[in-house]
Image 1 (tube, helix red, strand yellow):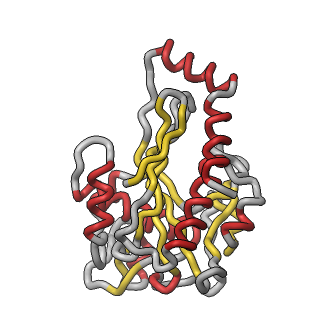
Image 2: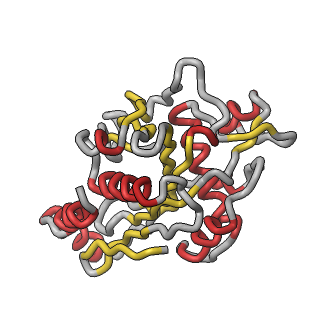
Length: 257
């Protein structure tokens, strides 16, 4: 398993007949689809060399990636910009986000990406990445945190990668992939996981095992990046560069952030 092979798989998809036809339709209609900001989180447990991560299968009734094995994640909500937190993003991570994001490089936008990752983890798995705080979120989406006197914790988040969905697809996302270790997480439900119904068959699985399941092309790229990162930087340092993937001139290009 190497990153070049996985990039080649994506470029084959990008240049396939159906994708070329979708891109042509998009160009002809003049309605280019703007990628939505999104966050995904990879929660890790286990000793170096024996790590497992949380993944689940998307409900087969969903229109986007039905049945695929994925990490918890989703779009950034408007309310994510206003949620109080117990701490803030590490300054190196925040700077990477602001230096590479589309549009205005605002601290509030970087922070919202981290908040969205923690919220999606809680909504889709029941795992709460938080700390005790006097000021807890009041929004209904954060009910589990408020009940336990917690506010989301952002400092443990490390940036693993970023990927922008290629043009020509009916839905596009500008997704930032974060990693955090289980010891940073504050609350695990007694039953292990609490599924939202969007992600099913939640499990702890090694990245190598996940490559053998029904994983989409970009998920495979991120899994390979994760395995490489765990080999070269098992402590998940904030300072390590992270790759950014984007399609330009029908090529899936990788640059470091």
